[in-house]
Image 1 (cartoon, rainbow, N blue to C red):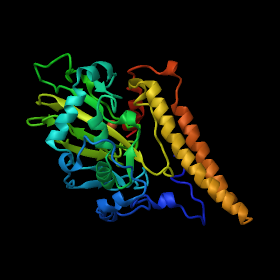
Image 2: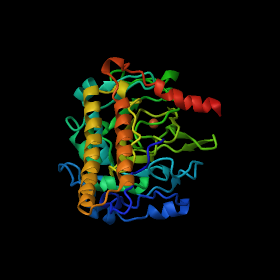
Image 3: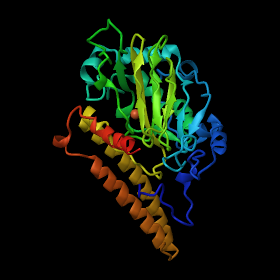
Image 4: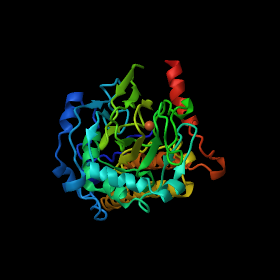
Length: 378
Ligand SMILES: [Fe+2]
Protein backbone atom coordinates (compact mmCIF):
# COMPACT_ATOMS: atom_id res chain seq x y z
CA UNK A 1 0.00 0.00 0.00
CA UNK A 2 1.29 3.45 -0.89
CA UNK A 3 0.40 5.03 2.44
CA UNK A 4 3.46 5.30 4.67
CA UNK A 5 3.40 3.27 7.90
CA UNK A 6 3.76 6.43 9.91
CA UNK A 7 4.52 9.98 9.03
CA UNK A 8 7.84 11.19 10.31
CA UNK A 9 8.73 14.69 11.22
CA UNK A 10 12.51 14.85 11.23
CA UNK A 11 14.08 16.40 14.25
CA UNK A 12 10.89 16.61 16.27
CA UNK A 13 10.21 14.45 19.30
CA UNK A 14 7.23 12.21 18.92
CA UNK A 15 5.79 11.32 22.31
CA UNK A 16 2.87 9.41 20.84
CA UNK A 17 5.05 7.12 18.79
CA UNK A 18 7.46 6.58 21.66
CA UNK A 19 4.55 5.23 23.70
CA UNK A 20 4.05 2.29 21.39
CA UNK A 21 5.13 -0.60 23.56
CA UNK A 22 8.01 -2.36 21.84
CA UNK A 23 6.32 -1.93 18.47
CA UNK A 24 8.84 -3.92 16.44
CA UNK A 25 8.73 -2.05 13.15
CA UNK A 26 12.25 -2.53 11.86
CA UNK A 27 12.26 -5.97 10.30
CA UNK A 28 13.48 -7.88 13.33
CA UNK A 29 14.51 -11.51 13.02
CA UNK A 30 12.01 -14.07 14.33
CA UNK A 31 14.26 -14.52 17.38
CA UNK A 32 14.22 -10.81 18.11
CA UNK A 33 10.47 -10.83 17.64
CA UNK A 34 10.07 -13.64 20.13
CA UNK A 35 12.29 -11.73 22.55
CA UNK A 36 10.25 -8.56 22.14
CA UNK A 37 7.12 -10.51 23.02
CA UNK A 38 8.53 -11.24 26.47
CA UNK A 39 7.98 -7.70 27.67
CA UNK A 40 6.17 -7.35 30.95
CA UNK A 41 2.54 -6.39 31.49
CA UNK A 42 3.76 -3.81 33.98
CA UNK A 43 5.35 -1.79 31.17
CA UNK A 44 2.12 -1.81 29.23
CA UNK A 45 0.04 -0.96 32.26
CA UNK A 46 2.40 1.90 33.15
CA UNK A 47 1.70 3.54 29.77
CA UNK A 48 -0.13 6.86 30.01
CA UNK A 49 -2.38 5.84 27.14
CA UNK A 50 -4.03 2.94 28.93
CA UNK A 51 -7.69 3.59 29.67
CA UNK A 52 -9.01 2.52 33.07
CA UNK A 53 -11.34 -0.49 33.27
CA UNK A 54 -14.97 0.17 32.42
CA UNK A 55 -17.50 -1.23 34.93
CA UNK A 56 -17.09 -3.78 37.69
CA UNK A 57 -18.52 -7.00 36.29
CA UNK A 58 -15.27 -8.27 34.79
CA UNK A 59 -12.69 -9.15 37.43
CA UNK A 60 -9.32 -10.02 35.86
CA UNK A 61 -8.17 -11.88 38.98
CA UNK A 62 -11.14 -14.22 38.58
CA UNK A 63 -11.96 -14.16 34.88
CA UNK A 64 -8.54 -14.06 33.20
CA UNK A 65 -6.68 -17.37 33.21
CA UNK A 66 -3.98 -16.45 30.72
CA UNK A 67 -1.29 -18.95 29.79
CA UNK A 68 1.37 -18.04 27.23
CA UNK A 69 0.90 -19.62 23.80
CA UNK A 70 3.41 -22.35 23.05
CA UNK A 71 4.54 -20.45 19.95
CA UNK A 72 3.85 -17.24 18.08
CA UNK A 73 4.38 -17.56 14.32
CA UNK A 74 5.91 -14.46 12.79
CA UNK A 75 5.23 -13.13 9.31
CA UNK A 76 8.74 -14.26 8.37
CA UNK A 77 7.97 -17.77 9.68
CA UNK A 78 5.19 -18.01 7.09
CA UNK A 79 7.13 -16.43 4.25
CA UNK A 80 5.98 -12.79 4.35
CA UNK A 81 8.16 -9.73 4.99
CA UNK A 82 7.79 -8.67 8.62
CA UNK A 83 6.88 -5.17 7.41
CA UNK A 84 3.79 -6.43 5.53
CA UNK A 85 1.35 -5.51 8.26
CA UNK A 86 1.33 -3.41 11.41
CA UNK A 87 3.37 -5.97 13.38
CA UNK A 88 5.84 -8.76 12.54
CA UNK A 89 3.49 -11.27 14.21
CA UNK A 90 1.32 -13.49 12.01
CA UNK A 91 -0.61 -15.84 14.28
CA UNK A 92 -0.38 -17.40 17.71
CA UNK A 93 -0.92 -20.97 18.72
CA UNK A 94 -4.08 -21.26 20.87
CA UNK A 95 -3.67 -19.97 24.42
CA UNK A 96 -5.85 -20.01 27.53
CA UNK A 97 -7.43 -16.59 28.05
CA UNK A 98 -10.74 -16.58 29.98
CA UNK A 99 -12.00 -18.82 32.79
CA UNK A 100 -14.85 -21.28 32.31
CA UNK A 101 -16.99 -19.03 34.47
CA UNK A 102 -16.22 -15.98 32.29
CA UNK A 103 -17.09 -17.83 29.08
CA UNK A 104 -20.33 -19.06 30.60
CA UNK A 105 -21.33 -15.49 31.50
CA UNK A 106 -20.48 -14.44 27.93
CA UNK A 107 -22.58 -17.31 26.57
CA UNK A 108 -25.57 -16.26 28.66
CA UNK A 109 -25.29 -12.74 27.24
CA UNK A 110 -25.20 -13.80 23.59
CA UNK A 111 -27.81 -16.57 23.97
CA UNK A 112 -30.29 -14.08 25.40
CA UNK A 113 -33.44 -14.31 23.23
CA UNK A 114 -33.51 -10.55 22.61
CA UNK A 115 -29.89 -10.57 21.36
CA UNK A 116 -30.61 -13.59 19.17
CA UNK A 117 -33.64 -11.91 17.69
CA UNK A 118 -32.39 -8.36 17.17
CA UNK A 119 -28.71 -8.77 16.29
CA UNK A 120 -28.54 -11.89 14.06
CA UNK A 121 -27.24 -11.71 10.50
CA UNK A 122 -27.11 -14.29 7.73
CA UNK A 123 -24.76 -13.95 4.80
CA UNK A 124 -23.68 -15.88 1.72
CA UNK A 125 -20.62 -17.16 3.59
CA UNK A 126 -21.86 -17.73 7.14
CA UNK A 127 -25.23 -18.99 8.30
CA UNK A 128 -25.52 -17.14 11.57
CA UNK A 129 -23.60 -14.25 13.00
CA UNK A 130 -24.48 -11.95 15.87
CA UNK A 131 -23.13 -8.41 15.82
CA UNK A 132 -23.43 -5.04 17.45
CA UNK A 133 -25.13 -6.14 20.69
CA UNK A 134 -22.48 -4.76 23.07
CA UNK A 135 -22.40 -2.90 25.37
CA UNK A 136 -26.20 -2.51 25.54
CA UNK A 137 -26.96 -6.21 25.93
CA UNK A 138 -23.55 -7.58 26.93
CA UNK A 139 -21.90 -5.52 29.60
CA UNK A 140 -19.64 -8.36 30.74
CA UNK A 141 -18.34 -9.07 27.23
CA UNK A 142 -17.80 -5.36 26.70
CA UNK A 143 -15.86 -4.96 29.95
CA UNK A 144 -13.82 -8.11 29.26
CA UNK A 145 -12.47 -6.85 25.91
CA UNK A 146 -11.98 -3.29 27.12
CA UNK A 147 -10.10 -4.24 30.28
CA UNK A 148 -6.46 -3.05 30.25
CA UNK A 149 -5.21 -6.44 31.43
CA UNK A 150 -6.98 -8.21 28.56
CA UNK A 151 -5.60 -5.63 26.14
CA UNK A 152 -2.10 -6.05 27.52
CA UNK A 153 -2.30 -9.80 26.83
CA UNK A 154 -3.59 -9.35 23.28
CA UNK A 155 -1.01 -6.60 22.62
CA UNK A 156 1.80 -8.67 24.03
CA UNK A 157 0.99 -11.54 21.70
CA UNK A 158 0.36 -9.28 18.70
CA UNK A 159 3.67 -7.44 19.17
CA UNK A 160 1.97 -4.05 18.89
CA UNK A 161 -0.23 -2.13 21.28
CA UNK A 162 -3.82 -2.78 20.26
CA UNK A 163 -7.33 -1.62 21.16
CA UNK A 164 -10.69 -2.98 19.97
CA UNK A 165 -11.20 -1.40 16.56
CA UNK A 166 -14.55 0.03 17.69
CA UNK A 167 -17.31 -0.95 20.11
CA UNK A 168 -19.42 -2.33 17.27
CA UNK A 169 -16.82 -5.06 16.64
CA UNK A 170 -16.72 -6.22 20.26
CA UNK A 171 -17.92 -9.74 20.23
CA UNK A 172 -18.76 -10.69 16.62
CA UNK A 173 -20.25 -14.17 17.07
CA UNK A 174 -20.13 -17.06 14.58
CA UNK A 175 -22.61 -19.79 15.45
CA UNK A 176 -22.94 -23.19 13.87
CA UNK A 177 -23.60 -26.83 14.49
CA UNK A 178 -20.88 -28.89 12.84
CA UNK A 179 -21.72 -31.33 10.05
CA UNK A 180 -23.15 -34.77 10.86
CA UNK A 181 -25.02 -33.42 13.85
CA UNK A 182 -28.55 -34.75 13.65
CA UNK A 183 -30.44 -32.89 16.31
CA UNK A 184 -30.18 -29.22 16.95
CA UNK A 185 -32.30 -26.28 17.85
CA UNK A 186 -33.16 -24.64 14.54
CA UNK A 187 -34.26 -21.50 16.33
CA UNK A 188 -30.77 -20.85 17.61
CA UNK A 189 -28.31 -22.78 15.49
CA UNK A 190 -27.97 -23.50 11.81
CA UNK A 191 -26.26 -26.57 10.36
CA UNK A 192 -22.91 -26.19 8.68
CA UNK A 193 -23.64 -29.15 6.38
CA UNK A 194 -24.19 -26.81 3.49
CA UNK A 195 -21.01 -26.17 1.48
CA UNK A 196 -22.07 -22.54 1.14
CA UNK A 197 -21.72 -22.12 4.87
CA UNK A 198 -17.95 -22.45 4.81
CA UNK A 199 -16.08 -19.16 4.89
CA UNK A 200 -13.75 -19.15 1.88
CA UNK A 201 -10.28 -17.66 1.52
CA UNK A 202 -10.30 -14.06 2.60
CA UNK A 203 -8.49 -11.27 4.41
CA UNK A 204 -10.20 -9.56 7.31
CA UNK A 205 -11.32 -5.94 7.32
CA UNK A 206 -9.27 -5.06 10.39
CA UNK A 207 -5.58 -5.54 11.26
CA UNK A 208 -5.86 -8.10 14.07
CA UNK A 209 -8.49 -10.48 15.39
CA UNK A 210 -8.70 -12.48 18.58
CA UNK A 211 -10.84 -15.59 18.08
CA UNK A 212 -12.23 -17.01 21.33
CA UNK A 213 -13.76 -20.49 21.47
CA UNK A 214 -16.99 -20.47 23.47
CA UNK A 215 -18.03 -24.11 23.00
CA UNK A 216 -16.83 -27.38 24.47
CA UNK A 217 -14.69 -28.84 21.70
CA UNK A 218 -14.40 -32.34 23.18
CA UNK A 219 -14.69 -34.78 20.28
CA UNK A 220 -14.58 -32.02 17.67
CA UNK A 221 -12.47 -32.76 14.62
CA UNK A 222 -11.24 -30.03 12.31
CA UNK A 223 -12.00 -26.39 13.03
CA UNK A 224 -8.44 -25.26 12.29
CA UNK A 225 -7.50 -21.98 10.67
CA UNK A 226 -5.75 -22.49 7.33
CA UNK A 227 -3.26 -19.82 6.29
CA UNK A 228 -1.74 -19.36 2.84
CA UNK A 229 1.96 -18.70 3.28
CA UNK A 230 4.10 -16.34 1.22
CA UNK A 231 5.27 -19.31 -0.84
CA UNK A 232 1.70 -20.46 -1.56
CA UNK A 233 1.74 -23.42 0.81
CA UNK A 234 -1.10 -24.01 3.25
CA UNK A 235 -0.36 -23.93 6.95
CA UNK A 236 -2.92 -25.06 9.50
CA UNK A 237 -3.13 -23.60 13.00
CA UNK A 238 -4.98 -25.68 15.59
CA UNK A 239 -8.37 -24.38 16.69
CA UNK A 240 -8.73 -23.25 20.31
CA UNK A 241 -10.61 -25.09 23.08
CA UNK A 242 -13.29 -23.50 25.24
CA UNK A 243 -11.90 -20.40 26.97
CA UNK A 244 -8.84 -20.39 24.70
CA UNK A 245 -8.09 -17.99 21.89
CA UNK A 246 -5.95 -17.36 18.82
CA UNK A 247 -4.56 -13.98 17.74
CA UNK A 248 -4.22 -13.48 13.96
CA UNK A 249 -3.07 -10.56 11.81
CA UNK A 250 -5.95 -11.37 9.49
CA UNK A 251 -5.90 -8.17 7.42
CA UNK A 252 -2.61 -9.17 5.80
CA UNK A 253 -2.83 -12.98 5.49
CA UNK A 254 -5.16 -15.03 3.28
CA UNK A 255 -6.92 -17.41 5.63
CA UNK A 256 -9.88 -19.71 5.89
CA UNK A 257 -11.80 -21.28 8.76
CA UNK A 258 -11.93 -25.04 8.20
CA UNK A 259 -15.06 -27.02 8.85
CA UNK A 260 -15.47 -28.76 12.19
CA UNK A 261 -17.18 -32.11 12.75
CA UNK A 262 -18.45 -34.06 15.69
CA UNK A 263 -19.15 -31.44 18.34
CA UNK A 264 -22.41 -30.33 19.84
CA UNK A 265 -22.14 -26.79 18.56
CA UNK A 266 -19.46 -24.31 17.64
CA UNK A 267 -19.66 -20.75 18.87
CA UNK A 268 -16.69 -18.45 18.41
CA UNK A 269 -16.32 -14.81 19.34
CA UNK A 270 -14.19 -12.74 17.00
CA UNK A 271 -13.08 -9.37 18.35
CA UNK A 272 -11.17 -7.10 15.99
CA UNK A 273 -8.30 -4.82 16.94
CA UNK A 274 -6.33 -1.90 15.54
CA UNK A 275 -3.08 -0.28 16.71
CA UNK A 276 -3.67 2.15 19.57
CA UNK A 277 -1.29 4.69 18.05
CA UNK A 278 -2.99 7.13 15.67
CA UNK A 279 0.32 7.35 13.82
CA UNK A 280 0.41 3.80 12.49
CA UNK A 281 -1.17 3.46 9.06
CA UNK A 282 -4.77 2.23 9.00
CA UNK A 283 -5.56 -0.16 6.14
CA UNK A 284 -9.01 -0.92 7.52
CA UNK A 285 -11.62 -1.76 4.91
CA UNK A 286 -15.28 -2.44 5.61
CA UNK A 287 -16.05 -4.85 2.76
CA UNK A 288 -16.40 -7.95 4.94
CA UNK A 289 -18.63 -6.24 7.51
CA UNK A 290 -20.75 -3.67 5.62
CA UNK A 291 -23.32 -6.24 4.40
CA UNK A 292 -23.82 -7.68 7.91
CA UNK A 293 -23.97 -4.51 9.96
CA UNK A 294 -26.24 -1.77 11.14
CA UNK A 295 -24.65 0.80 8.82
CA UNK A 296 -25.51 3.75 10.98
CA UNK A 297 -23.57 2.23 13.90
CA UNK A 298 -20.71 0.89 11.75
CA UNK A 299 -20.14 4.09 9.78
CA UNK A 300 -20.64 6.32 12.82
CA UNK A 301 -18.08 4.45 14.91
CA UNK A 302 -15.58 3.97 12.06
CA UNK A 303 -15.62 7.68 11.22
CA UNK A 304 -15.55 8.61 14.91
CA UNK A 305 -12.35 6.73 15.72
CA UNK A 306 -10.62 7.82 12.51
CA UNK A 307 -11.47 11.46 13.19
CA UNK A 308 -10.22 11.10 16.77
CA UNK A 309 -6.94 9.75 15.39
CA UNK A 310 -6.77 12.56 12.82
CA UNK A 311 -7.53 15.10 15.54
CA UNK A 312 -4.64 13.78 17.63
CA UNK A 313 -2.25 13.97 14.66
CA UNK A 314 -3.45 17.46 13.70
CA UNK A 315 -3.04 18.79 17.25
CA UNK A 316 0.47 17.37 17.35
CA UNK A 317 1.33 18.91 13.98
CA UNK A 318 -0.19 22.23 15.00
CA UNK A 319 2.04 22.38 18.07
CA UNK A 320 5.09 21.65 15.91
CA UNK A 321 4.14 24.29 13.32
CA UNK A 322 3.63 26.94 16.00
CA UNK A 323 6.96 26.09 17.58
CA UNK A 324 8.76 26.16 14.24
CA UNK A 325 7.19 29.56 13.38
CA UNK A 326 8.46 30.96 16.67
CA UNK A 327 11.91 29.70 15.75
CA UNK A 328 11.54 31.20 12.28
CA UNK A 329 12.02 27.84 10.57
CA UNK A 330 9.56 25.95 8.41
CA UNK A 331 10.12 22.25 7.86
CA UNK A 332 8.61 21.73 4.41
CA UNK A 333 9.40 18.03 4.32
CA UNK A 334 7.60 17.48 7.58
CA UNK A 335 4.53 19.46 6.44
CA UNK A 336 4.29 17.57 3.16
CA UNK A 337 4.73 14.23 4.89
CA UNK A 338 1.91 15.10 7.31
CA UNK A 339 -0.43 16.33 4.56
CA UNK A 340 0.29 13.31 2.40
CA UNK A 341 -0.58 10.98 5.28
CA UNK A 342 -3.82 12.83 6.08
CA UNK A 343 -4.96 12.97 2.44
CA UNK A 344 -4.31 9.24 1.93
CA UNK A 345 -5.91 8.27 5.24
CA UNK A 346 -9.07 10.30 4.69
CA UNK A 347 -9.36 9.35 0.99
CA UNK A 348 -9.12 5.70 2.03
CA UNK A 349 -11.85 6.21 4.63
CA UNK A 350 -14.04 8.03 2.11
CA UNK A 351 -13.93 4.99 -0.21
CA UNK A 352 -15.02 2.73 2.64
CA UNK A 353 -18.13 4.79 3.42
CA UNK A 354 -20.31 3.41 0.64
CA UNK A 355 -23.80 4.83 0.04
CA UNK A 356 -26.28 2.69 1.96
CA UNK A 357 -28.34 2.01 -1.18
CA UNK A 358 -25.26 0.40 -2.78
CA UNK A 359 -24.66 -2.09 0.03
CA UNK A 360 -26.06 -5.55 -0.73
CA UNK A 361 -27.27 -7.03 2.54
CA UNK A 362 -25.69 -10.40 3.30
CA UNK A 363 -23.34 -10.38 0.28
CA UNK A 364 -19.96 -10.90 1.88
CA UNK A 365 -18.78 -13.45 -0.70
CA UNK A 366 -17.42 -10.70 -2.95
CA UNK A 367 -14.82 -9.96 -0.29
CA UNK A 368 -13.41 -13.47 -0.83
CA UNK A 369 -12.99 -12.94 -4.57
CA UNK A 370 -9.60 -11.22 -4.32
CA UNK A 371 -8.17 -13.96 -2.09
CA UNK A 372 -9.50 -16.64 -4.43
CA UNK A 373 -7.99 -14.82 -7.43
CA UNK A 374 -4.62 -14.92 -5.67
CA UNK A 375 -5.13 -18.63 -5.10
CA UNK A 376 -5.85 -19.29 -8.79
CA UNK A 377 -2.82 -17.31 -9.97
CA UNK A 378 -0.64 -19.53 -7.77
FE1 LIG B 1 -11.13 -13.98 8.89
